[in-house]
Image 1 (cartoon, rainbow, N blue to C red):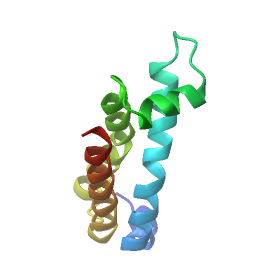
Image 2 (image 1 turned 45 degrees about the vertical axis):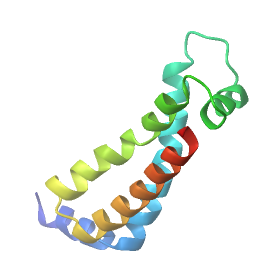
Image 3 (image 1 turned 180 degrees about the horizontal axis):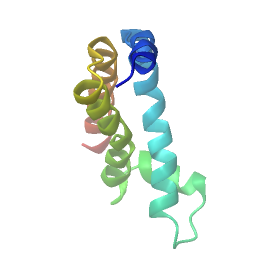
Image 4 (image 1 turned 135 degrees about the vertical axis):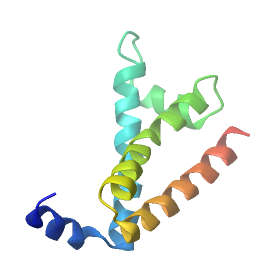
Length: 106
C-alpha cells in the first residue's frame, strides 16, 4: 500500500467516521436488497418496506441482508487497512442494528 493511500486512510481512522459509515451502509444494503429480492416481482418500495418492518416471512432475510455491507466494510477496515478506531465505530453501529433486528423479529 502506497504512502498516499496510508495517509488518506489515516484521515478516516476515527470512531465518529466509523459510526457515520456504519449507519449509512445498512440503508444502502436495504436498497440493494430491494433491487435483488424484488427484481422478478411487482413489489413497490413501500410494500417492500412494510415487509421489512412489519411481521412477515421475509422480514429477517431482508434485515440481515442490510447488514452485509457492514460485514464487508469490517473486513476491509479491520483486516486489510488496520483502521482500529474506524472499526470500533463500525462495530458499535452494527451491534445496535443487530439488537434492533432481534427486537423487530421476536
